[in-house]
Image (cartoon, helix red, strand yellow):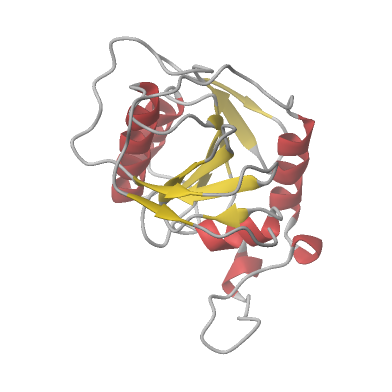
Length: 207
């Protein structure tokens, strides 16, 4: 499926794809694991590979990260996938999208995918074309710009990852937060798959 791209601002581009899992899709051999989470209304940010920016977006969007696992709860969790735009990041995003589209992920409300640049400057054509292909496999994709501010972020405590609070987030992330807030409470009827393993459990706590 070909994604339709439109500039939503000078900083943020968005593409759209299928709103729900599709019949006839084959699940990837290696997919993301599963994390059991509390059934609440928070946004779960799922990095599809190491260094994707899961923690950065989870904090900036006042959501929670899952350590690169699909969240699973009694009510389908609201999920945003995140990846970098280098080739391995886009391939990981493609596998996660395929896993969701095949019904091989838990029942989730997948709002879309956020792609974070892996370097400043224009994305090479080959990667841009591949990113558009990946975008065609999820409900919507946000192409975020390079943000120098994120390189200057510092950990809140020693040993923690550097993060930017929602109040201090760059404009593009605040625009992304606004886009997510404007989405309907439920954008699609998730398909409930069969048992998926392995799984882990996250105790209920503040988002």
